[in-house]
Length: 336
Ligand code: 6MZ
Image (cartoon, rainbow, N blue to C red; front, side, top):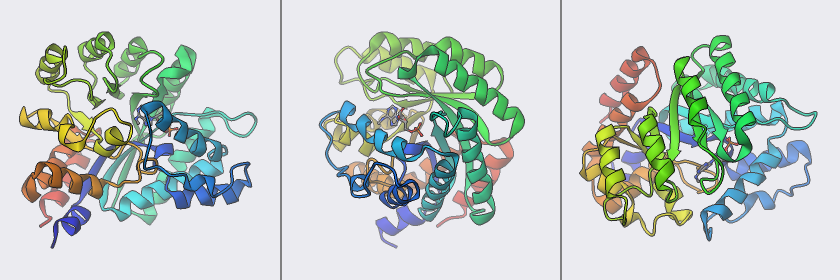
């Protein structure tokens, strides 16, 4: 088995995937036809190989958002995303998404219900992949919207136990707030928390987020020892032992990291800090989890044993139940 095949066949764990950023071109085209929307299907094929900046990359989400405007479209989109992760041999997927209301077409509750319905439907069609949902808060959308999303997540853990397991703080890192007091409220009701952190330089906020101690952190791009002024934050991160979700291609394509070689993976891995490899937005960045592992291996030469170990450790950092973790670990351990 060559390395490409090994990475594809390895049972994998995806902990950082935004629903609307994960839509493949074929799903976008399917949605274009479904809605006869103003977006032509050739626009859905937009070149995703070259963004000049993080802000430019954020414009890509507008395309998916313009197409997932009804519960039916959200259902189709979610089913497709689960199917595609399953086809890449992902056995555990934590999908995250920001509840969205669209005029008279969809409420935030209907948006979340459509995702849950798709998770239920996929359970019988693809029993090999276990899927959980994290409700996202978009930093840019303000306090009221964030509070609304958290209240919905709280309602949903009671209504659909085992589906919604956490909250994700995300959105354009160059704008908005981190709403830590709201995250505290969700922590109190048993929701796990993952927060995008230091995707762009922001010492004060990074410090606040690290002190808050979410269960996991996303990116941490601007925290590493060779970055001027971030040594103290790096030490704080190492001391915290909070697992970091690393999305290599995403950071390269958004130009927040100059090349794979200089990715923060290098510093965190060397320090023995808990990490998990993820895709972020597999549609927008034209990637998949096995591709990310292949890149990791070719750039840092970490080898099969370590890739398998990373997959096993990712189970521990997931928001799955203890029983679920046990059976997921057994599946990965049995792979050779
Ligand atoms: C921060 C990101 C992101 O929620 O509509 N999102 N937030 N940094 C990133 N790095 C590239 N990639 C995606 O999926 C799309 C939304 O996820 C967040 C943004 O808020 C984006 O609008 P959902 O399913």
